[in-house]
Length: 98
Image (tube, rainbow, N blue to C red; front, side, top):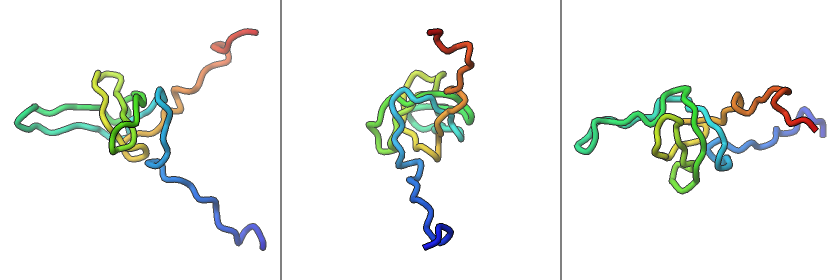
């Protein structure tokens, strides 16, 4: 069989990929709650805000925390946040000398 007739490899949806605790993330949309009888509303994270994964004990799959909000909350990988690859970049001058 020729390779052009073969099926591409199956890729997991991002929501099924579990990121390790401590992974830096970027929010891809604003996460907020509207006002109700208990609260005037909360901004959990703005679009393009930065944060990190702090756990996995929620139905959304990831418990995350925005850098400017002290309380963690559940969010869906790929729909509400993605891994922040910009944070992972370091310059050569930051590498330890051996």
